[in-house]
Image 1: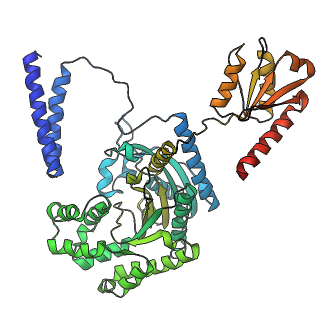
Image 2 (image 1 turned 90 degrees about the vertical axis):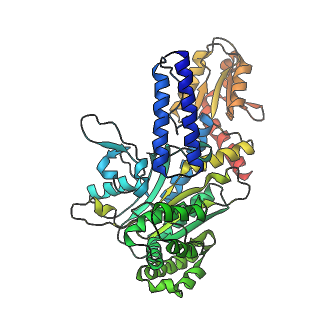
Length: 508
């Protein structure tokens, strides 16, 4: 390609880019935007065809590597969450990271387009899992399990537009807890919300609200407002965007894109602005909305839910919010979403950090005889929590330990590497976490600096005189205090020091 042709093509790319940006600014129909984006990509492809391939060293879009400090924080978060799950009787399971495409198809409404399909390898047609809930339902149906209280932590994949500074990725972890089985009304449901409140509190978030609603109330509200029955799902998907978009934009989508009558959309608006607690449930039961059978059923269940919230002491953290819709197709009863409300949170724009709800029919979709297993569960979006905690640690200049080493074996003179190795072996065999230098004759100062930089609490220092006397020096790294300890009592003394240091830290 000549220089002149390349310049002409660059001009066309610039013009096409302006068209795409203009359409996005005007909020044009998605189909039109996609059409013009495709043209832009074709032009860019022509430009690169003539150039040698240049390899760019980077992670794939919507993914990232994690440094040791980030992993230390993640392990702490996972440990806190798993501890809460176990406190409520959860059992761990695992499922494959990819499923048959047919397993996932038709379960996520408009979000189905975000599923990652794997290339056909001449065998089964597969997709990466979009969440942990649908695979769990498949697991129940396939293994003929009718009741279980399970938790699972694993990566899921979505072809979303990533906003990595806000904790939105294409590859991310979910932490799920679900109760499957035929139980009495709202007892498992309220415990899931209780678990959610406990996790957020245990992670140090005091300012949060758990928004709740009910699919029966939503369906009844749509019917009462005049939404055609075959449009419930698409209108529900539009209402689900109210936490991100103003009402005017959602109304435009309902009317212009989904063909809803303007007066019907305005009727919906009268309800979705309502928020409150048990008093709102009582008020709506006295409202004309309660003349709708579905809405009345949902409101009666919500009244019982709030009674149970009082018993669990979480009423002040729960808000009945009629704008909460949760666009996934499989929800059938109560739905909930946790949002952080702390003023001045370093990551306050991160959005919801957990969500869930009741899905009584999903398992039946996989069973040959259609046998349903009622389920309710929560999913904690830990990537968003990590983003907040990382921002908090940065703001507070918190130093996180990236290792758990308890003792470092140092030598004060040359030719003592074998003695260090003997001590390491003995301490490892007694279950202690120990390191030493991989240099034969390291400088003592460098070894002690290593301990201080990595916050290793204890150092053992050996030299010729210590070996002759049958002792070692035990050094408290933080205070630089040193004591002589008999070599044959080394393990016992180390354990005592570590125990005392742990007690002092707990009291502090």
